[in-house]
Image (cartoon, rainbow, N blue to C red; front, side, top):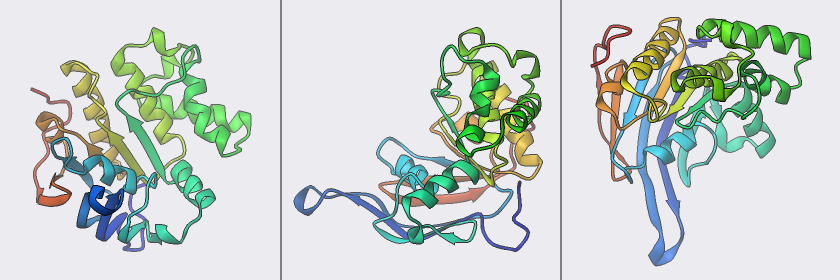
Length: 242
């Protein structure tokens, strides 16, 4: 799913501030962030440690809520949702990809990809068909029966991408998705994100690697909880990585 078809932004943050603690030990992780991401965009969010990029990812992923300001995901004001509704959004509208893959050991790639559908109550036959389709989309159909220990790092991350795709989310949100990969596997995974974006999916990647960010259409740089720059660029051709 890419564009929502009704002109609404995929992501809209207005004056978003996030503070932790209170009084003298209060820490401001985000400070009045305004950010709009349209459906079908491919954005890399960059910044040094402590810049606020992880906090921003947690808010975009509905894992945390702003202290002040507004966050709309696909037109929905997240502040109005209870925990059950937030959980449904995380499961259905957002596909998460993490640096550490988060695959369940001693469980097949197919079963790992099925997991979000099991949480959503999808029947076993449909789960299997959709998981196989997602594995095929990332080029792992022939490895469906293999466990994580039998897959390379790049294959494990592609399985994680398949798991993120299986619910057909409006947004793919990846946190340092190439942090544990060599350059060849990085090119493989980033080429996959570029292709999925080319099919109309909204992709947001948190990264500190400049080479990874070259795959995006837009780079947002954070510093001290504020957006330092927000620039569009021509992404590198799919599969090119130096």
